Length: 294
Image 1 (spheres, helix red, strand yellow):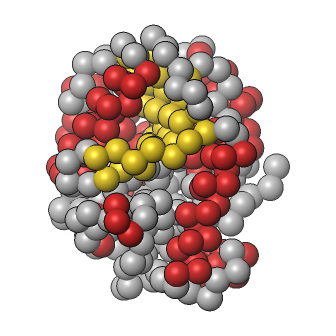
Image 2: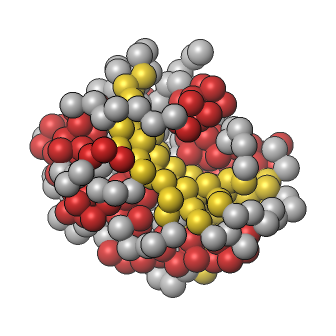
């Protein structure tokens, strides 16, 4: 399996330039660069027979992708996107957080069984008329803000109603893992939480990389005790330097009773490689619960 060019949590300039060159753009802020990112998602979804849905969820319009026709199911898996293109450098935020590589969308499209929906974060994949309240703070310091979590929560209500679902499985990639945990703590219909290279301890993450703390964001660690009885599976890449497994191990220590949670460290995977390619093989194996890793 081969790593794909993907957006980084820190968006190093070299990776950014290479990715934009691959997309045929010269700047992440340029219309060409943004449209290339939007087009990639549309093409991926359309090729799989999925449709794009704009959900008015209060402060934001959120974009979801789902199979056509809409399936009526008892339990629905919702894949929450990562932080996307948050920064152009350590000091310059992006003008649009649409991912260079939409990993959560790729995972959702390769969901091997049952019904799945992809849910983007605020301002990702949005068209100009949908960019309500799209201040860059919502993909930098306030990426996990209460209003962001509220918006995701409302969107889940709409998605769940559309599918007639009674229960949810939340799958969060990277920063989407933090959102999934924060939303799960508010709801009583989440049966399982899965994170893939998830940012479950943003405070520890910012200390590790010596970057500005996310002062406008909620901290998933605070809600960890309330999720102690929820079935959880956290996947980390053994070669992930952006969100190493030790951050997920720290999350497990905050659970009151970690017996329902497990951490699986996947050899040779990093933050981007090779989750999408391997998902049809990885996901079925999550049905059997493993012992927690410490």
